[in-house]
Image (cartoon, rainbow, N blue to C red; front, side, top):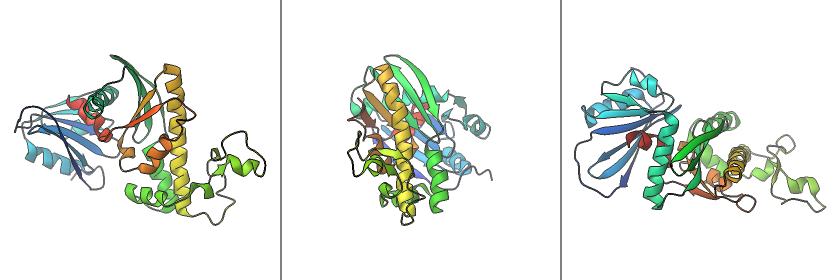
Length: 286
């Protein structure tokens, strides 16, 4: 048995207008650093699945449609290509992210901006600029979902994504982060008092801070780093909309809140796609 990841599976459906086709002819697969995301169309519905084990994916593909063609993308796609028996094709990952984001943006927002950024938060983070039909990757960062899981485990001992997020939601980052108002009190601060002066800057000073507080600080650090980079890119490219995608955002309201919290300081509109975790799979499929 070839096992790449620990086992769990998610299933989502997305209704599309169009004819009914009972045969699954194509399957888009985004084999990322930690999970395998799948998109395919069946009976007029765009269906999304997430796998954590390669052998379960292979069994499911055989049962779904042994004759379907597979369109693979993602960092593990070349590795996965060796194990699938279906006819398969490889698609460059960044192109798949851009194509999938464009498609879902039109489906969910019913419009496609002329000039926008895509910030893909997976294991790490990549920022892309899209202007009309042209696009390019601007830069990447090692801060992302891998940071959340790695440091989250070191802080709390938890290894499941949803456990880390749930704990962070109950924490108060002000018990762990050093804020601008902490430095200037009792005087007046030249900046907004609730801005971060130092991430985890009180962690060594406040013995009462809990793991939940430190996890809240971790999400603040990740969100601030990403929006600082993406916000500067938005200013440099004249982009007013930033589309955030990637598995790290799934059911992660604390991170979405941080990414949306700097609009008074930076001229951007955050957009979170309902199925943004699957842009790579969708982009490889279409």
